[in-house]
Amino acid sequence: YCADTNIKIIDSLENFGTILKDTVSLKNNSYLFQVKDSIIDQHSFQLTFLVTGNDSDGNPYVWTSKESLIINAPKLELGDLIVDDSEFNGNGILDPGETATLKQLVKNIGHAGISGLTGLIEYVSGSTLFTIDQSTTSAFELAAGSTDTISFIVTASASELIGTAVELKITIV
Image (cartoon, rainbow, N blue to C red; front, top):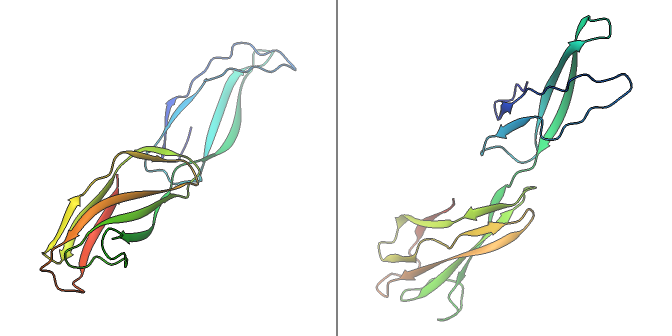
């Protein structure tokens, strides 16, 4: 039994047969539970085990045991965003007429790795003379405690006024 709504018990029954006095009975893969994809890193939950049987005199009994577990999960965090315009003047600012690589640091500060990630950049508001030339990244993975850099290609029109702002949204899916 588990009261935590993040955990779904799939298989909760196991027959151990007769367990003799002063012995141990062990079975691998006896129980199965599923964890929600949205579980947070280091989430703690408790499983309650009920063991039923009959003692040597045939009297029924119930023995209860509780086990606490901690889930390791990835936890992503976006770090610095770097404008790499080194093919132009290299000042770290997207100036009119430049094409640059936006480099977004992505950190996994969780306790488990994750794979199959893709970065996506979207225009939100601001300059209408701004173009996203490459809006998605290749699939990538992040081991627990690691950092990677994802890149997007953007261009500011030569007709753009210096200092015109643009708001972008970067999502990791």
